[in-house]
Image 1 (cartoon, helix red, strand yellow):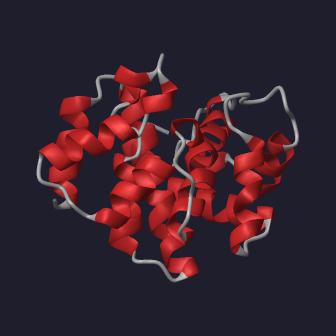
Image 2 (image 1 turned 45 degrees about the vertical axis):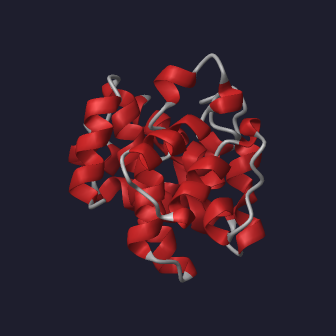
Length: 184
């Protein structure tokens, strides 16, 4: 499956535009993290793009979130075992343990995109280019801010050799690069 085919699939499957934007943001973050951590850029980006394909259907049954996406992808002939494993592993509620570096990174990158989006949306201009690393670090420390952005998962970046500051910076720069696609 090419990236263009994957984007078409995402847009056909996911109705909520904010969720589509989250998937695009996670794709961008994962691509840049692949570059930084020695992963395969296309593979890591694809995992980020496809990771929440089923979330609208599985929102009330998180124990199958990710698993349903894998079923859908396999039914379409997508058979990259590395990406499929990362899609499973990004959601700890389904019982899949993150094993590879890619698995660990997607667990941390998924909530990071939400934190960064929230940091842009609280600004009057609602623009990513005005979010600074300093303000993002401050927001990270505020538990009431973007409650859905799992701080423990984000801080898991240290397990794969990145400081929190470096991880936040990579994520912010990746999302700023595609800000028009994210409506921010």
